[in-house]
Image 1 (tube, rainbow, N blue to C red):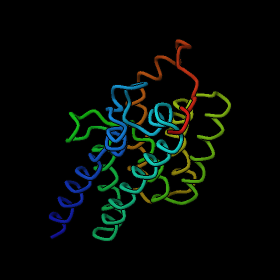
Image 2 (image 1 turned 90 degrees about the vertical axis):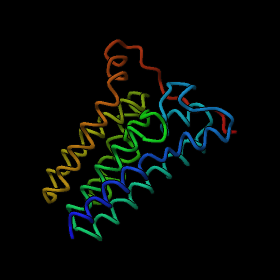
Image 3 (image 1 turned 30 degrees about the horizontal axis):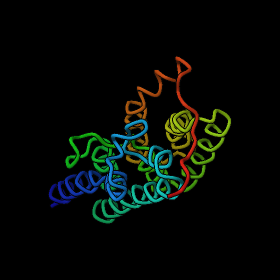
Image 4 (image 1 turned 135 degrees about the horizontal axis):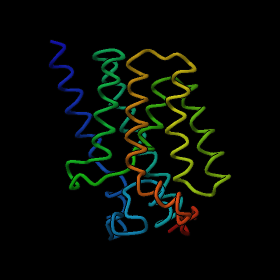
Amino acid sequence: MDILKYIFICVGGYLLGSVSISIILSRAFGVDIRKKGSGNAGATNMARSFGLLAGFATLAGDFLKAVIVMYVGWRLCGDWGLMAGGMACTTGHCFPLFYDFRGGKGISVGAAIGLMIDWRVFVGIVVVFLIAAFLSKKASFGSLCAAVAIVAFALIFAVPLPKLLLAIYAAVLAVFQHRANIKRLSEGTEPDFKAADSK
């Protein structure tokens, strides 16, 4: 029955999304990433705190888990299954069951969503992120621009409805998770991005 497939996709997607790569890796350094730097369990804070390699490993792990969930969802239920898996994984990533519902901001997972929606959307949001982050020297500003861009590119490339809804969900959740950054950006107190020396 399709309903059982969707339950499997949503529950499995949320649980896998709840596996925080940054928290697991940071504990290898003997600390909880949520107690360092910005306090965010994400790739940017990992790079700031432990170096670019740690940040990249976090990004890759979060990206991969989202791709796996969405691919399984697509195989089971097509584009609607992909949408359900993507939404569930993003929710788990931002509000993880295993870590007191304090997770990341959805950017790594959002990049994976861009790829699974349409490779052109993925390329577009990566370019937007890099340009915005480079010009502003702020990863959070680049992330916010990419969050807006994923919806814009999804519309430009006329992706199917379930993929468009997934893009909107990912964008809204990413902006919500960046609310503290938005406040600091508006006040001019958001720090520039600088990675720690690799360890």
